[in-house]
Image (cartoon, rainbow, N blue to C red; front, side, top):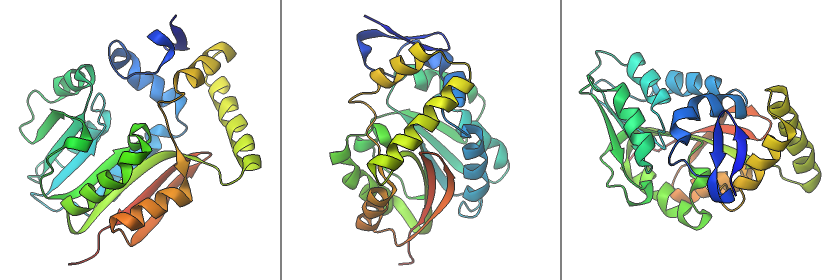
Amino acid sequence: MALTVGDGIDVPGEAWSFAGPVADHFDTHVARSVPQYAAGHHIVTALSGHFLPPSGTLYDVGCSTGTLLAALDDANRGRGVSLVGVDAEPDMVRAARRRFTDRADVTVVQADVRALEWRPADVIVAHYCLQFVPVADRPALLAAMHAALHPGGALLWFEKTLAPSPLLQDVIGQAYQDHKLSQGYGPGEVLAKARSLRGVLAPLTSADNRRLLHEAGFRQVTTVHQHLAFEGVLAVKGSA
């Protein structure tokens, strides 16, 4: 049985996947589903400029169709930087590569980020990506990101989070459902999307994410965006 979650997306087998036709509708769907999604792109683009030097390297992991990568490319024209998008899904990679057929400074790699061979980098962006990585694999992945960054390099990490108490989780969860209804999704579509994400999306609390960053080696961490359950943090690697 397929679940109809809106924006022309039917989820086969009741488990959310970024494969197949989702790529054709992804940008519209995520912009409606995640509050202030475009604002997150603007924040990432602005803050990355503080850490990405001329001829530097930036990774966008879980780049999907390349929308954020394109904004980063536009912001860095003529600076000689290298931008690398990474996504595991072939359909997302094909969609992203179509944006950059004439851009030698942008590479889109099909890979599981957990097995990625990292080049030394100045900025790593993870915009609503790591929440889909199994929790048990996140410590090693964050440690690999920290190791890949030059001293003074930055991780921009945006995630859906859990509230720190059952009461707050209930309030924030209902507020998020109200947001989706206000975007024109029907109650059945909201429920279907939630069902499809069971066992696929695994958010942690903000405190848990901060602990993972600290264990990976990041000591300078601050919140740069917060709306309901959606949080963006800037984590900077210390000097050698």
